[in-house]
Image (cartoon, rainbow, N blue to C red; front, side, top):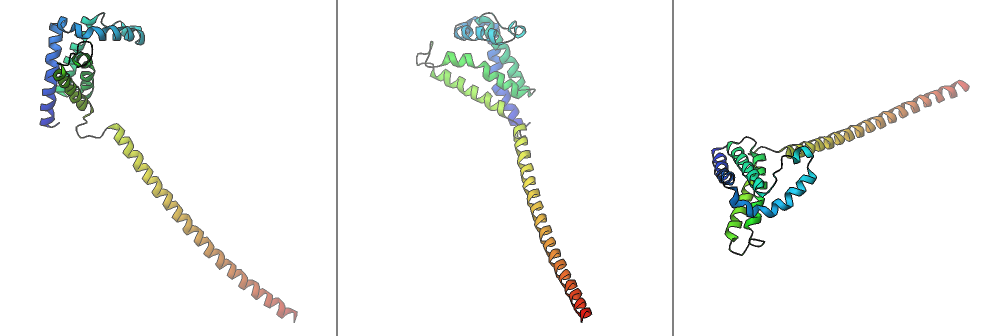
Length: 201
């Protein structure tokens, strides 16, 4: 990992860690923004998730704010330290959904004056999505699989061409051998015919 990547990830992660701490210390200030999402998301999650997982869901918007705060702290620390950084960055991107909805210039709380906040939150979300896709110059498994498949395809084409060339050489060799055998048989037959004719005379 380069020093530049480490510094950039740490700077980006610091925003989320600070936000997460604020959400845990003072969740009430974020409850109004989270309320619409909580009303939609929590019932849907309870129906979708297995009962064992649904038992851990928060009961109200305040609980969802705290859960989001914890996710931002964990994701921020993961991104900053590099331990599970891509998963941590993805968690941070998901945790930005309530903030994006609240700061949207159009919507329940949007009055056209929140455009700056929305653009900032959108930029931060884009930043963590980039971090989630950053492989630090190493090829991904999908790229390795694609490259391997292409290489195997090229090898198969080369093998097919080599087999076709060898088959053509074998065919020509057999044709030559056949012509030689035919000439030889013709000569033998000619000698035999002459011998028989000589014997009959």
